[in-house]
Image 1: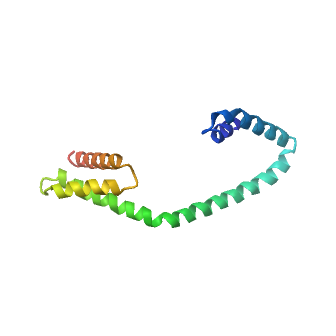
Image 2: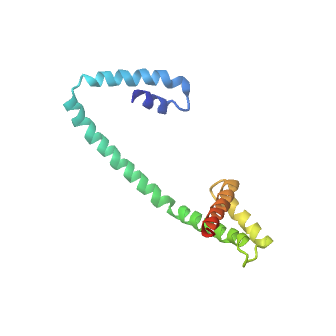
Image 3: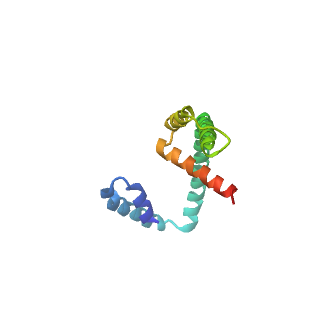
Length: 132
């Protein structure tokens, strides 16, 4: 566990791995003399409070970003509707539809090429499943 902890904290600065590893191992070794009962009586409540803090932070972030998530969802639905015209023989896929699809891809928070190719693949997979 000390290795994983040191690796995570030094991921962007590899030269810091060994100092972090030495400090965490020394700290763990020192805490091992404290006794299991005392260690558990301190760590369980501490980890519980940290868990509650993380839940509050995640809830606040969700509330703050909720409108951005909704707008991205609607943007992707519009892209799917537009590109589905291309593969539907009964609908016409115009140059205006293509421009709108590309513009929506640019407006997305995801890389434009990635979102456009993912939506095209999704629609192709869905159409191939429906034709089976």
